[in-house]
Image (cartoon, rainbow, N blue to C red):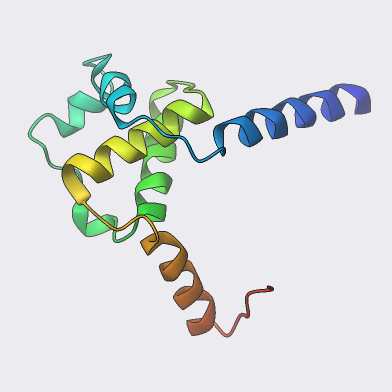
Length: 116
C-alpha cells in the first residue's frame, strides 16, 4: 500500500512540475471551458464569472479547482491553469503578480511571515 501511495505521489508531483513550467495557453483554456455545455457554460453562460468572489488570480484558480471537483471534469493540471489564464485574460484582467502580492498581504494580515 505504501508503494502505491509513493508512486501516486510521485506521479502527481511530476505532473505538477510539468504544468508549472510557466507556460499557459489561454486559447486552450477557452476550448476546455467551452467544451461541455453541461459544465462551465451551464452556470457561466451569460459571462458572469462571480467577480465578487475572485479578487486575485489565486482566487480564480481556487474557483476553477472547485468547479472541476464539483462537475467531476478531472482536468489535467495544465488544463486548469489554461482555464485560469483564459478567464483572467478575457474576464478578470488581473495582473499576473497580483496573486503573489495578495497571498503576501494575507499572510502579513494574519501575523504570518513568509520564509524567503
